Length: 318
Image (tube, rainbow, N blue to C red; front, side):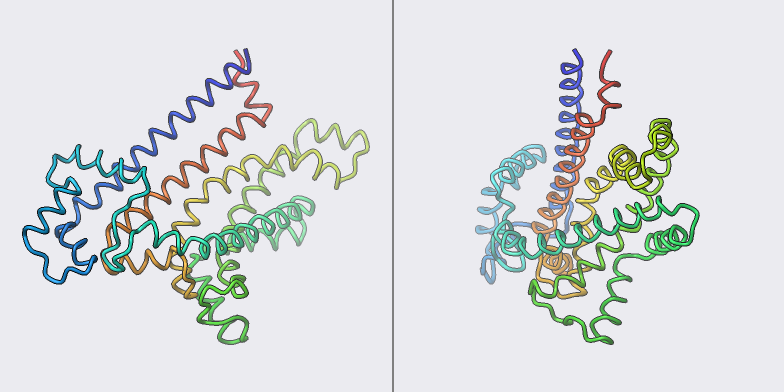
């Protein structure tokens, strides 16, 4: 019975995720018909047609179903997106999906390193703060989390660029996407994320350390290290993992500014250039990918918590 109810709750979470994803596609699709100018004209110009004729524009509008009612336009766009067709970039004249695929490895490298830095830093600092609660290491870590949470990521990136690259000569201003220079932009993103995650995990650890089963473990002679790592951390980590999962879309959405500051040739920098050029198909694709990444990560975290957390399993039973 418990397994059946768990499956039912998992199904409901999945249905909610699908509904959210569909709502996101409607909002993203609306960017194009609401944008000024004729999309068919812009696409023809991107394909190299210097002076598109009215006949060419009308033919492309028919091909793209732009002369159909809005619901039919949405369904046609959605069908093409499901097949990986995001139209062509107004700026480069290339299929948007191909442009994104060419720049995806650089962005994955950057965000992967940033995520690793953020997770390792927040775990280390939160465990240290919980182990030294009320003493100077804890106070120092709390000061860092408050300062880090209050400084925007782009400001931190500019400080890293100024003092680490320009003043100290570490790394390069023009990275060109070389893996050897990924550390500094990844550090700017990772340190910023680690501040909030450290606060969350520290608070969760301190609450868990005051629970009855932890007090019982201490009474039985468990060392402070064992209590912290064996008893407190596994029970306090779920909110931390949820925060990481929900930050996937935010990391991708915040990439454009960081990639532009460090001249990192990833998807974010490409999208920032598309914003300047009003390249709506690229903007549509990026916003949709970011939204679906957020929905997918949130769903994965919810399902993992539902199946791994005994407290949630008990809530699922009648």
